[in-house]
Picture (spheres, rainbow, N blue to C red):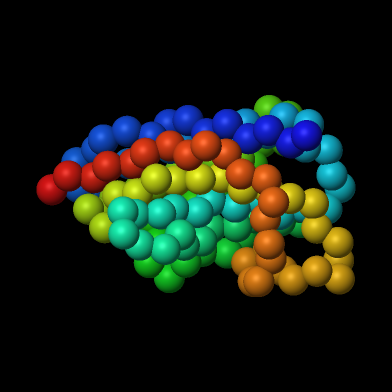
Length: 126
């Protein structure tokens, strides 16, 4: 069974940076989707960034130009570099991963993720 473990959350002043990491265990697929989601109190979960096995990344409009998703295959890790953080970025951040068949929706589209981490809290204060 796939296991995902996030780390790197914390509190940072507005304009600061954080780097989230997610280590994936027993995730050995040739074609796959990786993603970061977030959920703020009282709000629905939203997709922040995705990355597929070809290296194609997608970003939510609110984070474009500020966040970067990347992976380190050797370490089985997907990361989210977050720069120029704003109070509106405060949320619980979750990584997600799943295998993807070519006939399925793109990672940044209506793709359904079945493997999730426990989340890591990000707080941004002004």
